[in-house]
Amino acid sequence: MEDTKTRMVETEQTQCAKNESSLCPGADITVPEEPCDDIQVKELDKRASGQAFEVILAAPAPDAKGDFPLSPPKKKDVSLEEIQRKLDAAEERRKNHEAEVLKHLAEKREHEKEVLQKAMEENNNFSKMAEEKLNQKMEANKENRTALMAAMNEKFKEKDKKLEEVRKNKETKEGTSED
Image (cartoon, one colour):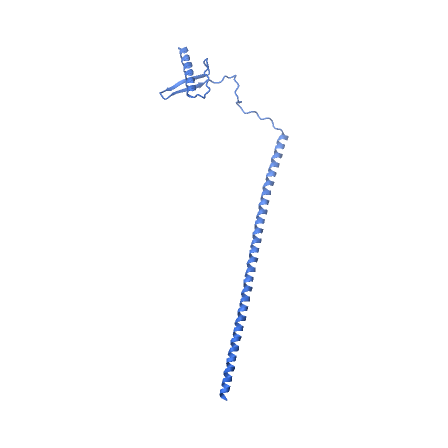
């Protein structure tokens, strides 16, 4: 009875492997000629849509060596000199990092100073240009006003001359008519 079950499992394993290789033509499945004692296949479900199997692997032999050690490798003893060397290296890295940060901050402050100085220069230049333009406009207005006042004075002088002439003419006419 035991022998028949083993043959049935072997037959199922072979059929399953053949079915898988026919379903997946690129799969490299080789069917062992002799039965493997460390693999056991149980049929779980058989339907028209397919079959379900459970593959049970046997526990590894105690004398077999695995690819990976079960425990992590033991740490070697670290000497006081090694610890001191590592501490010194860490201190050096910390100092280098601190120097980099300070250098970066100094560069940033220098850039801020340059930007502020440039802004102040531009503001001063703008103020000077605006003041110069205002002075030029005021000077031009003053000259125009002076010229306008001079023209008006000239006009008034001419009117005064004409009025004086008219008075003289009137006085002479009155003086001749009185005689």
